[in-house]
Length: 121
Image (cartoon, rainbow, N blue to C red; front, top):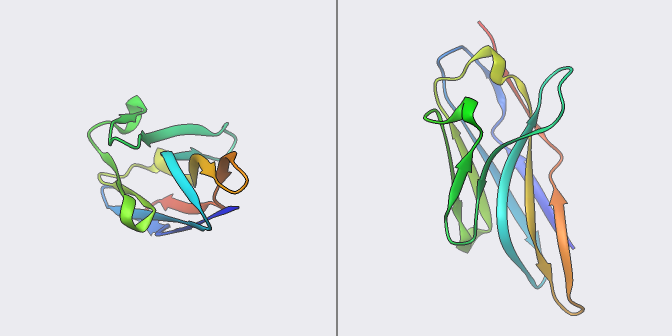
């Protein structure tokens, strides 16, 4: 199995910055895409940003130019740098990894436990 551990959430003032991290661990696995999703109060979970194994990125329109997703394949880690944060960015942020485990082979779609980001003055 693959486990994800997220960190970096917290309380920040509008206009501030936070950096989220998500580390994947397990035995004999490979990772394809890594992504961040969020779910705000009363809202459905939405994709924030995704990065492929080759480094191709895509973002939801509301965070373009403010958030940056990156990954360190050697550390099985994905990051989300969030700048110019707004109150509407307040949400629980979830890491998602799509990949495979081996021996036996199995595709996996794994979610982290979530980390809370609150943007408020």
